[in-house]
Length: 53
Image (cartoon, rainbow, N blue to C red; front, side, top):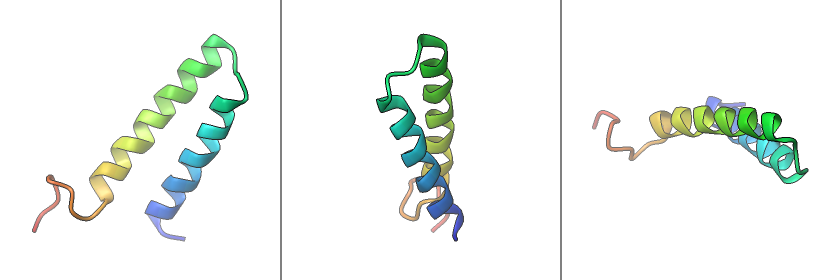
């Protein structure tokens, strides 16, 4: 499984946890983890402005 596939799977799992109506502290933690995953994805995905040509 590629790094991008792993990150997308992690994002999906976090989104599912977020939909299960977590408490405020857990919601904050999930949102923080989602931001990390989104940042990693933006750095890895081809076509990103930061990626070398």
